[in-house]
Picture: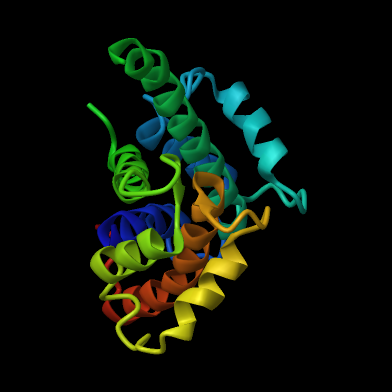
Length: 95
Length: 102
């Protein structure tokens, strides 16, 4: 689990390229390369732009570490919910 | 094939559910389950935490809805907190080594 946290942090840091925040362009690359399987529309640059606007609380056109973590947290939550609801009826059928 | 980030998120979900399924309600961590998870999965990060009241404090901080157990959404706050703590540390390491090609 420590390795997983390290990956979450490192993916952000390598996209930030030594800067404080991730630029719009590098955020596009990050989403396309790392979230292609869990998000639809990652082929669409405008969809990613819209998502970034939604995340960008302070509207500075960049993605801060906090904003990135909100996205990762949100995605993990929905993945976890999908998993539990998917196994729900199956589990119930066994009993 | 899942990306590194997707695999990491899968791992977090799997670890949570592995411990949440041990006792009590299935989709939540009891105090004991949280303690086991932290002892077994976060021993490197929390090495210096030998104080037995630490777990009570963390439990109270995480349990946003006050039901005495930690659900996945509340567990995510722990992950976020640890990530923020690690970010400063990894950033310093990277600056020292100048290696951006991970």
